[in-house]
Image 1 (tube, helix red, strand yellow):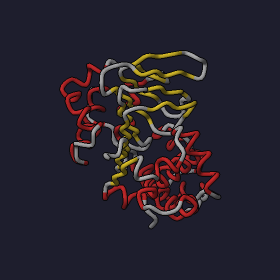
Image 2 (cartoon, helix red, strand yellow; image 1 turned 90 degrees about the horizontal axis):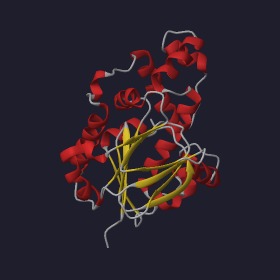
Image 3 (tube, helix red, strand yellow; image 1 turned 60 degrees about the vertical axis):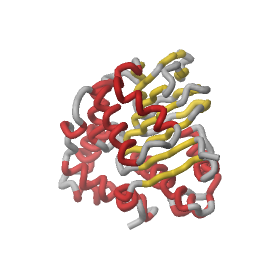
Image 4 (cartoon, one colour; image 1 turned 90 degrees about the vertical axis):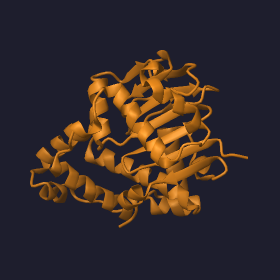
Length: 269
């Protein structure tokens, strides 16, 4: 029997594809582009109780929402806050927390949605689909929004730290960027939309998702990912994704594919 859910991880994004999902209130550090496979609307409920019926939507980082995509099929593209795609999508979002989108904007790309849902697209075609979806929403190439090289150096060091489960003093990161701690903090938030501390938490979660493809025990994955124990990891995953780690780690529930570049970027150094 085919695995109903698919999770594809690249270094700067991941694609969760599912026939249906219902979650409580969740919020995560990635920008999330949601699209209905069938074209029937799904429901988003915001923290203040507002109800949005959408065939597609772009959700800003750290925005609490409930999601009900019962039976329509859902593509959930999660974009790393340090990526060019995130910066391009941020322009489309502006000051809005959720941007409802007409799925018709994806045009011919929608012909690939069913194939993605049923696991018929390889990693290369899924990557191209994700890039095309971003382009349809923001109307520009991801490459037009370069990352400040000083922040890029800091991010590379943070990736290494997350793989080692270690922390780095702010003064060391600032020295790496040749900036004062205050200026480093401001520039990092300006480029990624979040604090360094918050990005480190996201890096830990992102790497732990990747570790679930290895088939290890949840306790070992939690410790390798930098959590104090499996219960701590479970609470964090529920808050971020509305799914328990045991679901994501179960190969019978979710087929996980990890890109080689993602392995190099997010693995322990």
